Length: 215
Image 1 (tube, helix red, strand yellow):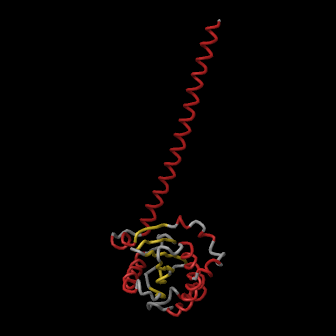
Image 2: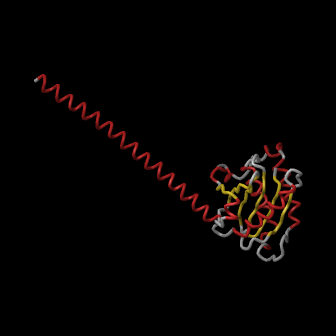
Image 3: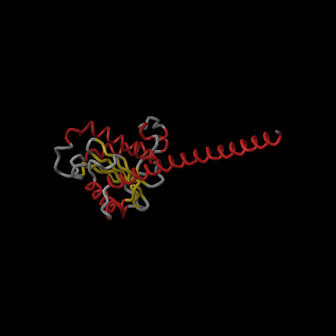
C-alpha cells in the first residue's frame, strides 16, 4: 500500500504537491512521516542519488529525483520496490508534462496541490493487484531494483550524513568488493598454477629417476 506521496523542489526543499492515504493503522504516525519527508527534502542536493530507498521503522520511503523535482512515496515493506519506482516514474512523466516549466518560478508551498487528482488515479492503478499485473511496460531501468541504494532515515536525518556521502560510501564498498573478487580470482589462479607446477616437478623427477635406474 502507498500511504503517502509528496513532491518537492530539490534546490530548496519546497513542497510542491502531496497526497495522504487514509489508513487507521498508520493514521497517528503519518504526520511524523510527513515531517521526516520534509526534513529529507531539505537535505537533498545535486549530488544525492537519483533513486533511493530509506527504511523508516515499519515502513519504507522510496524516492526518485528527476528534472529538479523529488518524487517520494511511503509504502509498507511488502509493497514491491519495482512497482513503487514505476509509480514514481509515472508521476514524474505526468507532472513534468503539466508543470515542468513552472517548477522554478513558484514560491508558495503546495503550489500544485491539484496534482493530487492524478496521484490518486495513478496510486489506484499501481496498488490494485490485477491492474499491476498488466503493467508490463514498467520502465526497463528498474529491471535490477537491487542496485538501488538503501539507507536508514534516522541516519540521514539525525546523524547529519548527506545522502551523497552515503552514496559515496556505498560506491566505495562496491569497489572494494570488486577488488576483493579480483584479488581472490588472481590468488586462485596462482594456486592452480602452483599445483600444476608441483605435479610437473614430481613427474619430471620420477622420469629422470626411472631413466637412470634402468640405465
